[in-house]
Image (tube, rainbow, N blue to C red; front, side, top):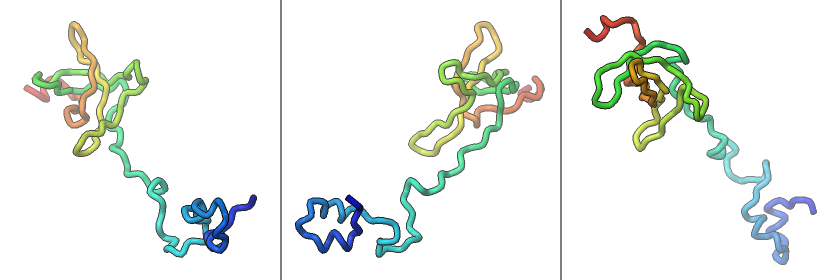
Length: 124
């Protein structure tokens, strides 16, 4: 059965699809402005660009610890070194880092708590 437009369905009160017809609008049959777009068609906001890559040497600030030399590495569980964290406020980028030391530790750290490693003199 071919699809009927809203006008055609409203002329047929006995049609079992009249309810569907009231919800369905075919392109070009809407009386509303054509400049309106569906929410899922809206362009996505740009995500935070990648600042660090796997292998980069960095300083990272862990909770309640001093700045520590680390290396950006890939999380073995999700096979990526970066992800967006969505919180109640604003989304932000996190990086998976491995701290140098014994034992070495790995954790996700917010991008704002990371700076590129240029040498020990940075934090003396």
